[in-house]
Length: 614
Image (cartoon, rainbow, N blue to C red; front, side):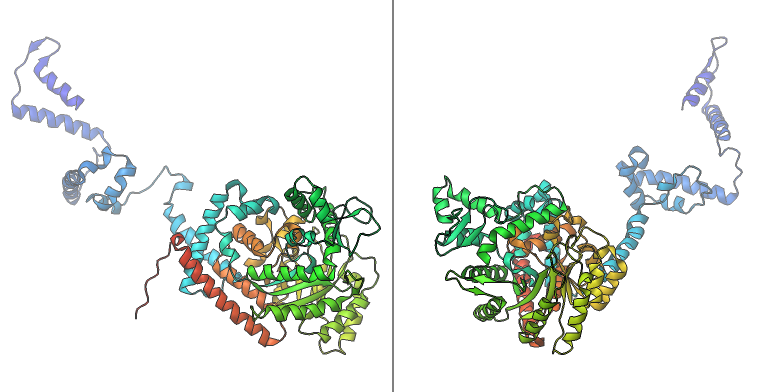
């Protein structure tokens, strides 16, 4: 436009003489104009290109269509807009773009490799392959082969959405990243997922120590209010401060004082009870290292020992523990209980393991009036840290009782800190002898060893448990460090009793997202969920353990269902009749829970189901 203007001026005014030349005719003007345009065109890239007749036709077509294109695009005329705004109009409206799209363009000489191709490829191709890999991994997991009903799929969607919301609501108090002690009140008061899991039927709890099975709230708010409950008011080498014991009358050691009197003399009875409860747990203790945690753990047990070994209190305590589990959706319990257990009463009598055996049958019968499929088993144990060179007497005792009470006593365990106590191989001679002796019985001795509850990667108890033919193992925390051994456990279907919160609070893992549970879950290992010693950790039931793994690993409904079914599959039922009844009842309870979640939390669902055609 600038050159054209200058050319026109030069035609009219002769700059050198400043005289006026004749004004050109229109024809002359057009001739000069075309000449200038052609001169400019010849200087352009296209100027020296000799077109064929066909190319000239196409050039005319394209020129006309470019004009039409501008009219069609209107306010969305591409050159006047940001490409981001013009892009959809070019794709959907332009009549020129499809022609240019097909034009052979030769080479592209400026292109950055990491943005050379459409990222649609990453989204719709690479992401598809990622999804395919994730689906393959999922199919190998515990949840992979679980076929869900339409209603279960709705609930899975609801729960998945709510787990994400829950993490946002919890914020800095996101449970898996915290110590359970810090997370506990937030789970109770803030989580929207925990109340749902609380009502979920969980099947069985397979790893539960009888003297810490139920909340110690019962000892504080019930037992310590009894007139015969005494507390030790000083600290000695054998009795810790705050220990409680039952006495018919004042003992000679005047350091034992009635809890009712101590409470009455305190300035604040509520604070007195809260402090007593805190002493019964390991909460609030400052541990120097992993081994000091176990020291605190054992000290807490020593404070309640005098209560849970009183026959009357123990019955009430076990009753309460069972009721807490039933309220938490558990209908099958397998208690760990010591072979050397003893009890006393206020009349001076003492009792051995037969006391617990007899009461178990009484408890089962009265519980089945309201829960017909309820079942209870005992796994007898010895503490591995005891200064004993042989456990053969306890093995023989358990073998005999297992065959005498096959519907109650299911096997043997060796418990306690693995990093400090004897390993399984230490007692190999005893295990060898009991295997030979077991051939004379209807049922050889079954094993449920604590194994892999350790900070040591090379925990050989995992290998010994496999070689000794364990039916299940407790914890298995270090099992994921041994791929070959995991294959053997999976192949032989050795059940693994995972106890998430216990593993964290005893120092095996700090952030629950680092727990090896998810590795074993994704490999389809025969794992189950248990609380171990919930009372020591300040809670009851097993819902908190389920909540931790759901929050940490986003376990869906298929996973929850399979874990619950695993708990029944790897339980030690007495005969198929007992197992089938328990499974049938669980399935019924599960379907009721699914319907309740789908109805109560439908506003959290992003799934719309079409009605069935009639």
